[in-house]
Image (cartoon, rainbow, N blue to C red; front, side):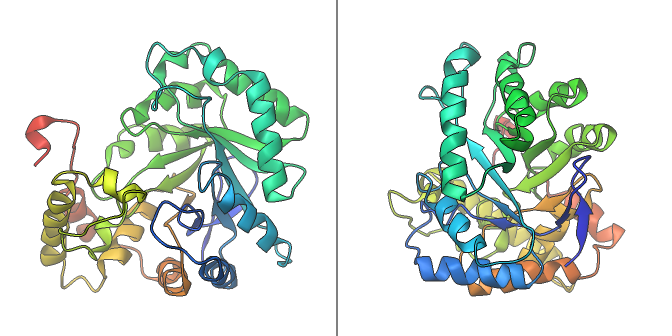
Length: 324
């Protein structure tokens, strides 16, 4: 396992982290025994960064992690996330920050995160989405900075809204966040335009999520899969989205079949390529995924010509003419 600087935090984190959404639920049946085995193997392979959230099983993911880490001697950085108070998701331009992230709510929520993770100070707390409307008066971040000075949180940041990830560029330049969690993968390459260069410039730690585009970039789907109603993927891949994603993934597989990399390896290596990236957090829910994903760190870096070919597979799904 290789390690990278986590922005200006002074920490070094494993370039492959542990994405812990599935162990909390929303991704089909999950046995706690499988979750614990996955965590055990991942840490044995050198992982020292775990990502979770309040919303992953209503705190279940956090509770599993908090209990599990009591049995491990090594230092592990845990990143968790708190959502806004009840209202539109994602927040609309008309949402008031004082109503969605009021101080009383944030303090109570952080207390719950501390309890679930069985710690006195959160390593990293991210606001679990944002809106550009709050950039000029980011009072919620000011509250988190105050809690940071009180020792309740070590590093603060934002998990970007997928429809407007670039809204965080101003916040990085204003110096009000330590870390960011962004979507960056073979299809979603927009962060390379500004977010990642500005992160490098400002020393903002970058956590990459959705490296597999919720599984389609692993190449394991056929395009006709049916997901349970409580499975996040049933909404993410609604309509013909899965079939379209599979067609594009198959095109990558065909073009790069002689590269020596599997699709999951290509997807993770691509997400790690930018020098601003600190860690990539693929979802890990069992022994096999723990072994396969962590092993990618030690594979050779992508050759420049292969990387350039992957750049051609960027898929901007925000435009009607690029959506197919």
